[in-house]
Image: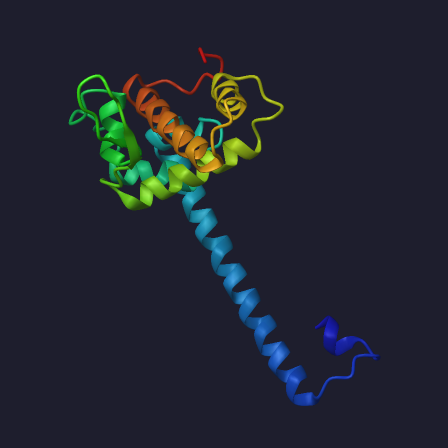
Length: 181
C-alpha cells in the first residue's frame, strides 16, 4: 500500500496490482499464523505437562506442546534423564575402546522434530545467557570459556535442556533456575 500511495514512486499499474496481491497474501498468512499461535497458547494453557515444560528458561510455547503431544507425562519407558536425552537423539555417539574415550557426532535417533526444537531452544539460551546467573547460563559460559565450538555448545545445551525437561515432568514441578551448575 505504501508503495502505491507515494506520489514519487514510478511503478507501472501492473506492478502496483501485483504488489497489492502480494500484500494481501502476506496479511492472510500473518492472520493464519496468529490463529495458530492462539491455538498453541490455548493448548499450553490446557496441559499441565506443557506448562511445566514451558517454565524452563529458553523454551517458548511450541516445544512444550510438541513434548506434551509426543510423550505427555508418560516417561516410564526411560530409566532416567540420560536415557531420555539419548531417546531424543541429542547425545554424542561413542567410539571408545579400553581407556580411550572418543565421542562423535550426535546419534540423531528418536524424534527429529523434538530434537530440532531443543536445538533451537539451545540457540536461544546461548544468545540470552550473557546476563543471567542461573545454572544453565553458568554452564554455557563455562563451555564458551573452554573455547568449545558454537555448535558443540549448542548440542551440549540441548542435551542439558532435555534432561531438565525430563526432571521437570518426572518430578511434577516447575523449573527452578537456581540449581547447581
